[in-house]
Structures are given as structure tokens and as C-alpha cells.
Image (tube, rainbow, N blue to C red; front, side, top):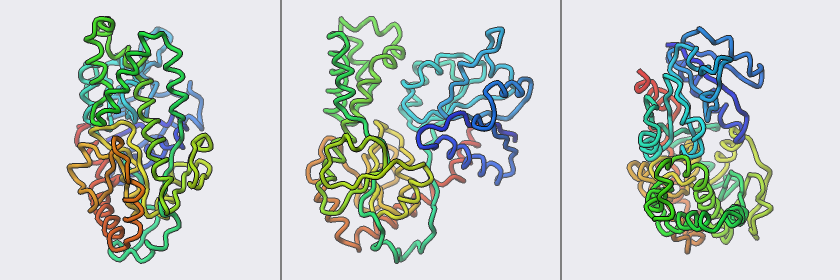
Length: 386
């Protein structure tokens, strides 16, 4: 098979291009032909050379190509004989402008079963939807059984990611007309009361209220235009609260990421943001790596698997997907955003007992290395592409 992998963006700590390279490497190992288009090396107009060509699949990450048009207003993607797969790494509500477009062979790969259901309901023209969470790589090999160096790792507790002040999001909400910010705050209330509730469930409930029934004419539009603020606030507040709780640990929390000087931590050690590959190197030096799930309820963020592949314990919100494979306190550490009380004490207790923490790290590594490596991911995608 012949694939075209597009690298159109260098945002998000260069993770998009990292994922593309890992996928391409595995496809080539499996005997497939891979061609890359890297915007960093070429101009956007250079894409026109693919007009009239054919591939078994074109894959881009968080793509904007569904909105690319030719001079005659036809879709650029319709001039290539290939199914196009947009690998979206966020909730589909953030990709509304692309998902409403209708190239004739438009497909999506996403990270969460709920995201798949959302796309099926609101964007039925999408031909195929594949659910496939992503991962990282093991960057430092060590004994899988003994973990000789685990107790001497540099970081007891690690987090990599950007800080968004929740008050900044709330201020944006408060600037909206009252009837609109009331609905957004209602969505926030529902999601914070029950961390299993999705933003689309709250919109479905709110849209039945008399003042909001007009949303039913185009629910995905209003979800994208307004309720992204509810999703953004809940994500920011969850990250803020979790980090402040872990800031109470006797063991030091190290944070690598942007804007954390705006967070009122007292004890955490702040570092500059790092690239995606470097974040995995840091995980290989950590005992516990924190993940704050970006409101995924039935999927997984790559931080979970990449930290486990680098033999750190993953401390994360649970999801339906993770609960199928992992056992709390045995192969992973789950926490609830609804109940952060005593999380710091719990983490300190785990870190203080090497018999326990080494076993959890080892069990997590075995699951991730068997089930969530790039070979498995690539084969799962190939099986569903055919």
C-alpha cells in the first residue's frame, strides 16, 4: 500500500509531526510505501503536485485541508484519488469548521468512543470513523523486571503540559450576554458535578430548555461556537486543582510547560516547556507522571501510555477505556477530579514504598508495551483502513 503523510503544523510541542513520523516508520517496517509532505520544507502551494495522483490513504493530524479549495471552488482533496483521514486529537467540537466540509472521501481517526459517536450523529457524511488512542516510545531501555534504577530516578512526580488560568476562561464567559453565559455555566455545573458527563450531554439537556431550543437547529455549530468555553474551563480548572493538590506533596512536583508562573503553586519546581520527544525523556527519569485527561471519558491521552512505556507510574483520571485494562493501585493510579482530597497523601504514601511503586510501574509497563506500542497502533489502523 502507498501512503501520503502530511506534516502541516509544528504546534503542540511538535507532537503532530512526532506522531506522523512514528506512524510512517511502522508502515515502512510493515512493507508499505510512505511519502511525506512537510510544510516546514515546502510551500503550501507545492501540494498542487498531488493533483491527479493516487494513494491508498492520505493522513494528516488536526488537518485544515478539508477546507482547501481549487480555483474552481472544488475541494482540493477531491482531485487526489485517495481516502483522506483526519487524525483529530481533541474533541470534535474544536474541528467543526473542517468536519462540516464534504470532500467525497472524508474519514476521521479519533481518540475516544464518545468522539466517534458525536461525529456519527452530527457529521454523517464522514465515511469512516476509527478510534485509536496514541502513544509515545520507550526512550531508555532498562531491566523490565528488576527496575534497578527506579528508586534513584531524578523526579518523584512529573507533569508536562501548559497552564491555562481558569479565571481567564471564566472572564471570557462573563463577557458574553447573560442568557448565553448562563447556559455555558449550566454546562460547567453539570460536568463538574459528575466527571463522567460529556460536554455534548450537557448541550443536549440545555437545548431542551425553552430559551435554548433554537440550538436544536444546529447543535454542533452552537457546541463549537459557545460550549467550547465550558469544555475549556472544566479542563483548565481540573488541571489547576489537581496540580495545587499535588503541590502539597512532601515529594517534589516538577512541572515542564508554559505559563505555570501564573499558577499559585508554592512548592513545585517550574521548568520551561519542552518538545514532545524530550517529554518522554523526562518520563524515563520520573517515578510518577501526572496526566490530566482533557475531558476524554471513553478514550485516552498519549501521556498515559508514553509514561508507562518509560516505566513511570501513570497518575491519571480514569476513563471507560482505561478501566478495561488497568487496575487501580496495581498497574495505574486513578484519581477523581471530583474528589482530590488526600490525593497528595496518597501519592506520598506510594512514593515512600518502593515495593509498591516498583510493582505498579512494572505492571503498567507490561500492559502499555504489549498493547499500546506503535506497531500495534499501526496494525489496528491498517486493519480498519482496508
